[in-house]
Image 1 (cartoon, helix red, strand yellow):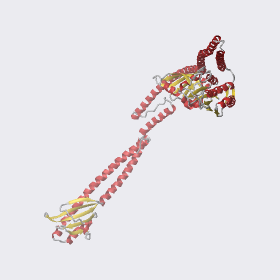
Image 2 (cartoon, helix red, strand yellow; image 1 turned 90 degrees about the vertical axis):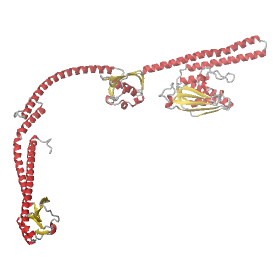
Image 3 (cartoon, one colour; image 1 turned 180 degrees about the vertical axis):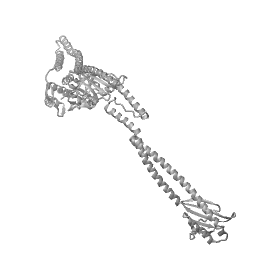
Image 4 (cartoon, one colour; image 1 turned 90 degrees about the horizontal axis):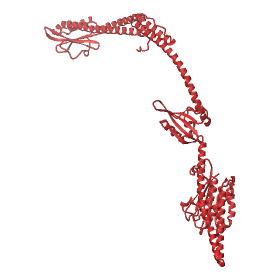
Length: 619
């Protein structure tokens, strides 16, 4: 029986009824057990007395061996209806007479006891009573009686006990229903008072005391507790009013400070953002929203990679994680893959009082213009240094190469004056002077060509490289036939450039392939588009532009790999003038033309195996 959630009225009644029922039941059971034990003893005593009488009367029948007399004596047991069987045994243990007279022998025990002995078996009482005459053993009497009388009596007792219990429980129920009110009603009244106080928050209500017992003491304690709560509430209400006033004042101050801070932050031209420990956006200033072209609900509360997946490859995630570990980060040159701009970034850890970071404040200052100007300045400086080096080299080599034919002219002129009458020598010296003047003229023309290309401001126009190549094939037609040379090429693209300069570029490369060749020349020109992933390998190229790659391959004399850059220097010759003619400016002009077209040129070769000149130009 679960009394935990039962109302107190029912609980008291159940406890009283349960107690009474258990006590009365135990009393009835004890009484029945006692009566059962007593009845058994009485039955045993009565049967033993009756058996003793029958045994005493049977001595003559056993002594004179008269079974008929024994049967008549046993028939006297009819007066006792509870005696169900009896048997008289002689001295040898043989059945002498039975009751009833026609009872089967198998109903009686075969093993007998010579001494007096009684026992209860199942619902019967059995026993042996010796037949003695002057202490002489003549036989023994077996007797068996049922216990129906006892069971009938016990049944009546049980019925009477049950009726008694029912009546007693009914009376206990009536009394408990009346008496439990003295306990339950004050407690229920206390409960109702507590509910009223709880629902209405009215701590002025008091419980009514019903007596001086424990419930009365509980009521006094309850009322005393209400007094304390009322006093505390009054104090708390007063404190809350003061606290609300202070909170209002403080909130107003904090709001003013917040508005001031937000005004400063939103007035900044830098990007300002705050991240939590999970790299979710907590705050962004107006400048950030304007630059990112996104609304507040698209960014605030979301992970940085959810809003801007490109930052995963920019290194910003690593810098944020370092800042979350308490490290101050200053990245002087951060290239944003989202905005394609360069920023100077600051990552400032935001820490609790215990020093544990709870977020990161980031400030990004746009330095794209400064970086671009710096890069341009660096590029100009590089070009200036290169120009200075070229100028120094040009001045040195030009002065040397230009002075050499002048010295020869001066030298052979002096010899002509000394050998004025020797016509043969005069003709020889005159030829030397003409050769030196011709070389000097060629040097001056090449220098002027290089200078014009370096200072060219001609506009770029769409240029068909195939048409340029076809025109050059006509120009080189005689020398191609003379040397039985082969000029093969694929379809070349259309690019923006200066047609005259590109014509000179192709002409110089084809001329070199024909000039520096001791075999039947084979010249192959191919082109393809430079893959985007390879653009990064050339620092002078712009990653966002598209480029075409043109290769001039020949089977000429080639060159040592260590001279692959030196051959593009002005007046640089890897072979003597006696072997091959030229001024050493041709490849320098090629390089200058390619650089003016914002491209790159480089060469690969091996001695005796030819060379390959690769040109990369923007489409």
